[in-house]
Length: 248
Length: 256
Image (tube, rainbow over all chains, first blue to last red):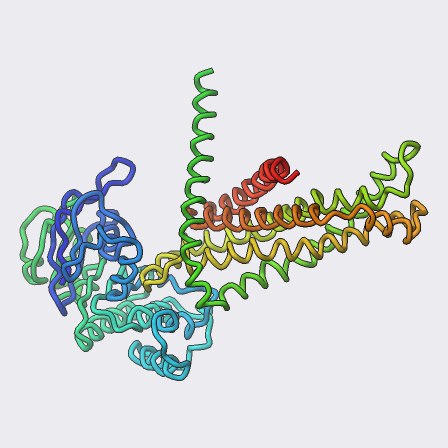
């Protein structure tokens, strides 16, 4: 269980998050939505301890990520996997080495067992026979799939997704959405997805939380979001002049 | 006047910030020593890149350093000191000063800058963040092997550099100044001091570790895409070079 309590974060004196509180339910996909620059990614990075909040707590299974020592923080991160917007694959390593790095670092598995697990995760994300390719040889969609396989390799309880479909064509984005939603449900993973794409959000999310002006302005079901009459939510939904139902 | 003072103050603050960050990084990477013992391949890879791949450039620079120091020493000796002492004078200068400093500067240009560029690129493309999310400490995984390879490989490079520099010095002394091999090497041997050699090695150790540390520290804190990486690369070379010259002065006071 992840509990976010009164998180505040400023950059250069400019407040981005002004006291965010949110509970992330177990084994569900929570989508953090909001306009670009509203602080969604900042919150995601605070969740996994890449950024420290100025105030507040992030309780992961009762442990405050913001208050952990460096060593304890690295231990706590083993519960997480994260897919970055750019996939952030290690460009000096092959696909196989990218995916297996955490296994090589944290387990005593043999080379054969590691290769088997890598194949299994690649299978899960719909790729095969790409272990020896370099990231530069992959398309954007393939990079995201490899990034997802790398995020899942340690069988994490929580997986964080930062704008998983940004920069992809609609067909590939749809396939990635299906993959994220399907994988999460099949493996019983608690997912937190940051996106400003309502189509993506609807495909993946069991629950929506919208950030605006540094606050949570909506927290509820996708249907509740669609029906919400708060001005910030309406502006976001109508931003492109299309209703959510029409867009999907 | 006030603006000049403010600008100077800002520069001092930037340097102190860089030094503080480097000191924290050094402390954290030293705590990663046990990790490195479990992952010798990470060290070996960096030792190859910093040591073996720097060798050709270091050797070329060393031959010419020896050659020019022999020629210039002979110019200053002419009419004052016998050429019988040429070998000893050049050898001492090479061991104490020229080989460590020039090898250090070559490594600062080749290795310090490339470490900053490599880690800087990893920082701006979120690869370092990705390492953190995989519960792998980037300081242990990336910085500790580079810093350790820096301080261990520069003394090794210095040994080769000193040898080649002596050969360069002898070649000029023998072929252009008419000093026989026996005279040159007898002079080197007669005034040889182990203290000079050890002092040179200590300098190389500090220069190598410092250069890699500065490259890592600047690389880790790179921001701003390709432009940021370019600036980090330049900063790493400038700071490493300045560090080598300042550290050389301080070490010389303590060692001699």
